[in-house]
Length: 151
Length: 437
Image (cartoon, rainbow over all chains, first blue to last red; front, side, top):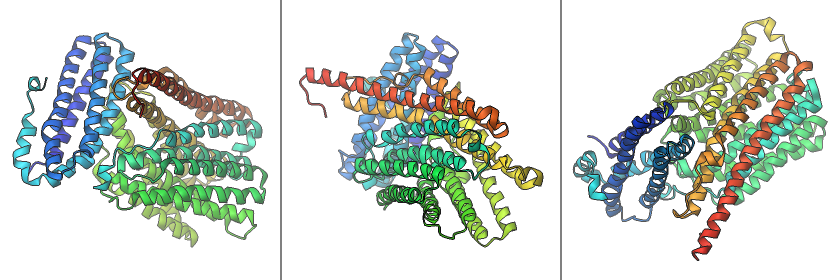
């Protein structure tokens, strides 16, 4: 059976691919392509964190009774990532390569170390604690969220 | 569970940073030593100046950054939180700094007292660090290759240190120990079990993370550290028993493992998804190519007796490994770790209301690239100085001075951005009349 860890790790790699697509377009000064790739990246990243904050984390917190632990740390890091995403978006719109690459670099490292904590520890804990709810949770995490509902 | 709940426990910025800022000072001292000693530093492996130069880089530059990075990596990646990280950092930093300085002075003067002081301070510093790390790691299961590798590397550091102390004590009290044999084993443990195993354990995480490469192959990550340590133990036994043929075979196996690590790293780096290489990627690539070149020199010396008879080959190996290999990779890592830590600290300080300057505003990319070129030039000049010491040792010393000074300046510029931005945050938050946590 599919696990939360495999499913969500796969989504992290999809976000990485979108990030690389923007970087490659910026390197070629293909600004239209970069803007479109950035929209995909932004959407995928925001949707992933929204899925975690609205479905996965509440299920973990309800089951373990821990709401001020790792999920709270992850929420804080999501907020930092959203701030960097916004700064990168402004730099891209202004076609400021240096500012974009500085914000993108910071976002990349922030995201990668965040993903690593989730992939190595939190998702494994979720698989362990939420084993009985997997059949219900996985389709919800798989299908995603209509982002307009969250705006 | 305990580890999971506390895995955001990044230590205070000052804990790793004091190590990172001290490291380039040892690079500067190494440059000055080359200028002061002249060709003697690169004439042969056993000259006082060569031993002092080697330990300025290993016990000075490398040990500082490696312990500083572990202060950060253990809690953040492994959830292994040290008790009182600032106190541990202050004590360990002071002790290993003094230990390295006494050791270098001891090699240059051959004063027994300086060897005793070097053994005492280095011993206390490393024991304090390994003890604190062992307590933090207690109960953390070795479920992934990085955790396994870091634990084995700490064991490697401990053995290297004990052997080094034995050598220093032996010189301090004029004991009749087999110095050449102990020095070879000390070098083997320091290079493989501490240096390469630590680099591989950290590389499994940071190479894919910084360079967006595929992960290291599962078979490699699972077995590399254990294999290296197992072969090293067998080689040590063979060396002690003077089984010349067995020792040569096991030595070759160790070198083959290093070639494998460098080869696998280069191979996954070639598949990086990033459109262009930055300083960190160039420095990693340069380091792996230098390691391969050092292994080729070692194998050539073992294969061709004529080459083995040249006193310069161990120095050539040392220059390739220490300056081309470890120093390059360490500089590359500092250029990601320091700007990110400064950004993270400032971002937390700004409480989401004041945006921290991005990483490339903390250390400018142009300055990193310039320093990287100075480092490459110093490596090239050091290699030339092995062949033509009279011609190249002084330019090499000067280039090392410039490259290490450039590294220090770049790291200090990060500190200065931190100070300026912190003041800005304080004034903004004080204006809002809200407490700064």
